[in-house]
Image: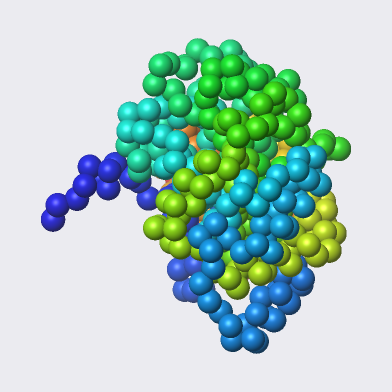
Length: 405
């Protein structure tokens, strides 16, 4: 069988694969704890469900414009004005099948084969593969100071004549690091000066902790006209706990949105009208659920950090936002895939290997689950790795005996 060069170069999504594994094991009755997921467990907002149900009851479920229905575009315009103090027009907005598609369509619109796209590491698993899908070159940037917080110098040193765009995801998946206001200012100004596209992946921008406030990239942009190369990405998946609805958006200059719309029109046509109506309900409805989720995630983070800090040999870095902890387990095993598979096999805890995010020796742990999942999950991991733990562990009525240390 003949497969294209691009097809051969693309890896499976590690996070989606783990979700499938968890579902299969749970269906078999296995006592799995999923600490790898990026999916809040709270229910979708009632306003979103009512909007979707109302449309379904009408039985008028039809095609939508390739760039989204006007009602949702207006909701995104209001959202952009409320949270970014930026007034845009409908022609500046495209609605996509999730923030992931919005990013993908943007990259297809701006990158040629062999051109480079820069993003700080650790990075979301899909960024490199998205670049490869269009023949472009992904360029991860590792901060020279060894932290999860890049400086503008780190970006400057990898820029070449082939560089076309930069992606910034803050707060960051997988680390939870929220980049400083100085860095966001510097990267906006740098990209304008060097005529580079800047994609701001703001999907977690309201899920931040310890009294932090979202940073507005538009505050530092000098060019907000139709020559602007700033692309803002967001969606309903994370902050509204609507991962399965697959609705995201991009805000950019009108010419770029027009090109993105053309591409999306041939890829998928417009997103489902039912799901877009639900997104309208989420954006225009009661917003208390976002704050409730943020508080829950902050509390869950605190519980996880407390448990990890009592775990000898583990280095845990306190996240500023999102629902992830990126934890250094290299004291026990430097091969993160091997370690992740070991924990799943021995104690039925799912984690995501750090190598999938560009950094070996780490595991990404999710705080999306219950406090019980977090405490029991860390307890199982500690039992599996720490030689000072008791030799036996009960999972429900199942007795496990450790015979590998």
